[in-house]
Amino acid sequence: MSNFLCHFEICTSNLKKAKSFYTQLFNWEMSSWGTEGTYETIKTSQEPFGGLWKTQEGKGVLIYFKVDDIQQTLNKVKQLGGKVIQEKNEIPNVGFYGIFSDTDGNQIGLFNEK
Image (cartoon, rainbow, N blue to C red; front, top):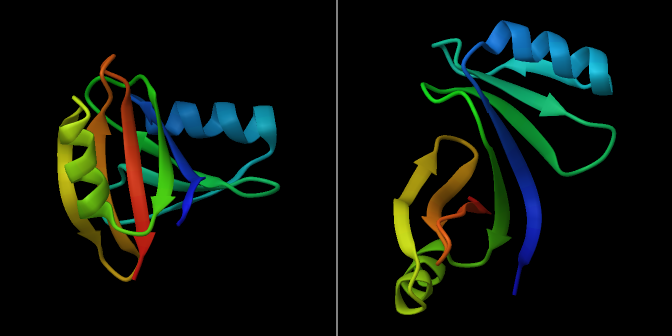
């Protein structure tokens, strides 16, 4: 069974400013993903890789764990007292993701490849 850290996302209200900050701070390579200018993929010196995501709130970090079955894991989250924030959803040509909050309200992402 897979359950390892596979991806992270850093939320920002100013994508251009955050991109400049993190590329200078960590020497990360970034490239635009999608057509709306709200997401930059991050290539670090080693895995896991990540993303810089423009959001209204502009703060927070979301980590993703790779799991074998997202729906089964989300069902278990509910049984254990957590809350599903985002049901299983497709990332075209990449895989699937879901997001939940644990019993303390921490949001965690789930991922699996196609």
